[in-house]
Length: 483
Image (cartoon, rainbow, N blue to C red; front, side):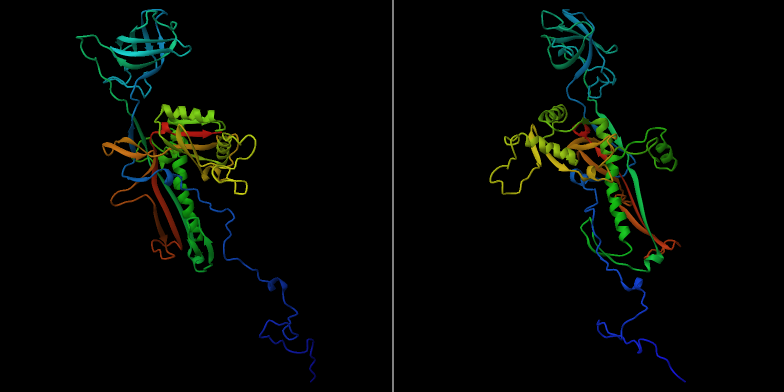
């Protein structure tokens, strides 16, 4: 028998070292399997910190509540002023009658018993000003017809009524005057509190991983937005679900709106029991909705000091809170920086290097963190308004919110549940809780994998739930900046 030996003519012998020799060369090796990929076990953070929450933690607090409805009372104005008053009498009359058309304005104080009555009383002294001219009188109220909403005055000036008949006037009460030996004031004025309420909404989320996937572990090194570092395996996605749910807890409090009666959302939510216990109510009042309906909205940016002065005039008319924080997007932040830079003497002719020992060799800070003009204003970037997956980069046709002025500190309100005055932050969150159930932030596992033993589902479900609402107290002190 003859034996024919083909090339290479000798058996392959593996080498103990990675040295290419004629005995360890494989000719029929599949190059598709030869080169294994180099993999990075650490996840690359190409979007940086992706979380958005922190706004409410900075400006407010969280408090428990055991009711479906949160109610509170906010004070009305202390003094009395009407801005839509018709002058029924002719010019130059010594005595004149005025018709009050804005008696239902909530800040006006009604007389005892009827909320629609005017708060003028005989013997009170008033200033009457023509809304369309400089005409002005001072007068004393001599008679009041509460049913008709009119009051009659006698002018202090011998020239009589300064405004023309049917002129629209503004009237405010500044005091009273009585003759010797006369009776006291007739009637009394009761404060007209504004009763406000809000209801919590239930937020939920879920993450599911099958038992089969849990049997094959793949590790990944992460640095997470909440500051944690290390390795995660199949719960990597669960961790991001939790972070996303944390953001939704805040953004829902900012964006929530009450559902209109007979709306599609109201019909759906009431059909699935979301409004149980609160008849006809669905949705909730978020920060933006509260400020849009009960606060102040400023269209346009802050590019000149006159724009700031207009805001200051509004604050003077409201609570006059000494310290305020403006949470801004990038555009409004730059506008404020440019406006403040223009106030520097070097701003027009070149770059200012700042104060003290700053010079051209130092790093130049072109931004400002705050300023004082009448009140203290602090500026803080609000990531939510810049994030492209949220409020950032909305179409120009949409209502773009550029910032929110929030008063710092707290305010006194009458808590309807406690039955007494309570000091509360202007902006805070109320969550449902009792001695046996805390719904501030609930999470639990169900299924039959990963230690869960609650059902025959071959998976593990991580459930998230919270029930909460945001209370905006003193919304008249807030300013929403829109483009």
